[in-house]
Length: 133
Ligand SMILES: C[S@@+](CC[C@H](N)C(=O)[O-])C[C@H]1O[C@@H](n2cnc3c(N)ncnc32)[C@H](O)[C@@H]1O
Image (tube, protein in one colour):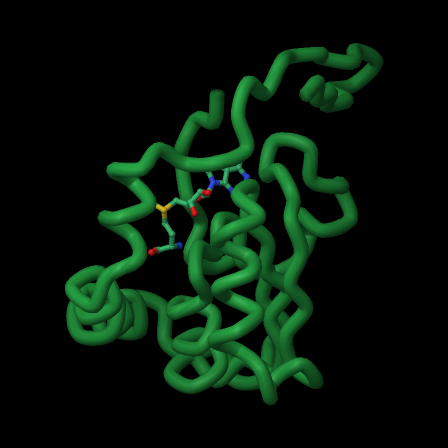
């Protein structure tokens, strides 16, 4: 897959060689221990640092299976979350997890490196800093 990003008057083109995380990362992210770390370690610390969004709209990049998406709604008190992940399997899991919250959550398969500029102006949480490919 080829991706492109506009930087000023230049268009950067690069190859995204895979859309699925490795089996190891898949296992590391999709387990109860990871969910516990998010719930009991990361969320409290992020809340202590920045507080809740109090009704804001949040863009979540690299949402994985959607545990963080639920926390952003419940603990960070966002009104709605737009969340995407490069790996379609993650998005499918997130959809299942967040069934019943479709009125407040939009999920899609997407690449953070090509995200539309209009999305970047929004408040952002749970950002992943990972190089794909
Ligand atoms: C370490 S996992 C974190 C998942 C979840 N946010 C969590 O905290 O458990 C990184 C996630 O980012 C996704 N990812 C990696 N590169 C991405 C990109 N360029 N755009 C969107 N998602 C990406 C992966 O598919 C994976 O689900």
